[in-house]
Length: 241
Image (cartoon, rainbow, N blue to C red; front, side, top):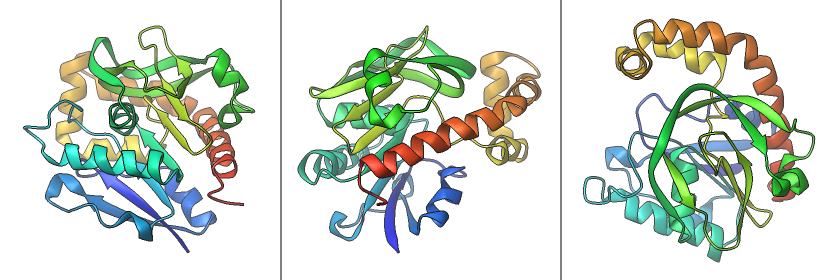
């Protein structure tokens, strides 16, 4: 089997709906809990890097020293080795900063369901073929890419966030939105009081129940769009022939 290096930043966080497709495609996920003191292993033994989200900010290297090593690993993986990379939320922002872009506090954060639209580059990209020009996605972020790295392309944007998706050549793709969130992901938050409390702090009392009611009817289309993006990515990057 091929091996996916999964860089994890929080407990109870995982690639969500992508795990089913990893199994279908013969890709074994190998999680590395870098927030828990686990070191990033030698990259030569892996075929794919998937970088998850997290509460950390890319500029907090003093508070989270492992972020520096993570950016170096991403730079080596994407620039030097030019191997398949997928990042979500923090993984999107780390791709940008690892390659010389800029991330900062968002003017307006996004937590909940929001619309994103393909840019002109997104419409032309092999990564986004077959996707609707506008789609509803799950968001949870308060920082954003302010300046994309040199040589990258912006594939999607929202009303609040100018860089919702990045591509580097045909082997690296990232999304600010949480395309990995599945019905199981959202249902799991009911057993995690901190997640529910954070949602209510951000969006008011009853925020979790409202998000469940809003997002569940949209999950089939979110699944379909993410599956199309994954199929495009694995072919364009050469991860799965």
